[in-house]
Image 1 (spheres, protein in one colour):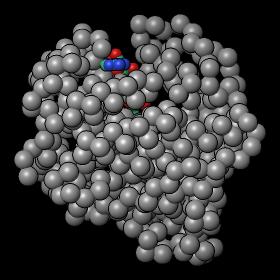
Image 2 (cartoon, rainbow, N blue to C red):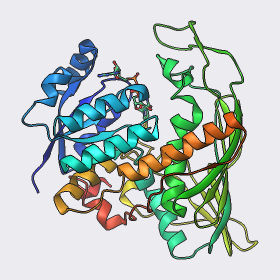
Image 3 (spheres, protein in one colour):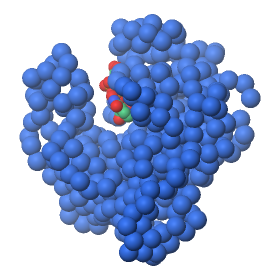
Image 4 (cartoon, rainbow, N blue to C red):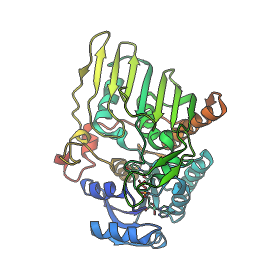
Length: 379
Ligand SMILES: NC(=O)c1ccc[n+]([C@@H]2O[C@H](COP(=O)([O-])OP(=O)(O)OC[C@H]3O[C@@H](n4cnc5c(N)ncnc54)[C@H](O)[C@@H]3O)[C@@H](O)[C@H]2O)c1
């Protein structure tokens, strides 16, 4: 297959990760960077040896087939819409949109134009999470009846130089970090039927802890502690704790309770990590994780498995092969439905039924993942 030309809109924090890791992948090449702030676009483009261009220039560029939307969540819909209207495939950072109407409009537009809409997160394609999927599908813990998922920390204002969007409507721990957890749970257990939750905005302001705005305070306009329940269509009930108000917690990131055992999964914001399984009442034992997207390749000492871009690589191959892509718009919109349901339940103090569904994305076995890589020995 020929290499697909990719452009990035949004030259902020996460663009570094895409630009740094893109050379790992065989089937796409990032050729240009754009931003509403052209100084940022020029700086990123110069750093990675590619063109900087305005959004309009990128939308009409003949060598760009697919555009990755790395803007802030409140701009996702408008930017993705322009990408599709320009006749280019669109892959968005999460959350893909902030309302179901926006998501349906993008899915309809993509279908009408014969284009693909994809979305992060792609960390569920990571070696640890795909190992868990394979074990689950092989019946290692039997039918799952319940579980827990916890994502808890003391906020985002300490490290992000412009953390405002985290604390505005459209941010908060559920919409920001929930996609990693909920997408992984949907790939493992299938779609969600209904949710309930309680939550609150525990502290009215946060103080920026780094960068040029250090010491400035930002207003908190969305709940920062939420505890929810998700009922899956298959019957399993999973607790979700999501908070930016917690100094220290010790829950496993994800724990699943099955008819014959228990499984613990590592952070679904990462590709690698340890998967442990307990058979019956026995203690936990680590499962063998033999998958290219679990091999350490990043981090200060090369200790982290980071294959961000894998979802994009899969979408590019899926276009060529005429099959569904795993990080697809239906899946991303269902996850938005779950997250908005949790927020609405907390606000209205009632259960919320999902109005969308999405099939489990296909598993990504090691041999399929290896095909995404330019040098299969990288994984
Ligand atoms: N920072 C992370 O570690 C991280 C990790 C995973 C996912 N994400 C997701 O990636 C997205 C971007 O996050 P970030 O941390 O890079 O944010 P950021 O604020 O650092 O960068 C966003 C960039 O988008 C640009 N932008 C905003 N609106 C635009 C528009 N309409 N047209 C063109 N450019 C526009 C901004 O000027 C900015 O440079 C978010 O959806 C976030 O949830 C971030």
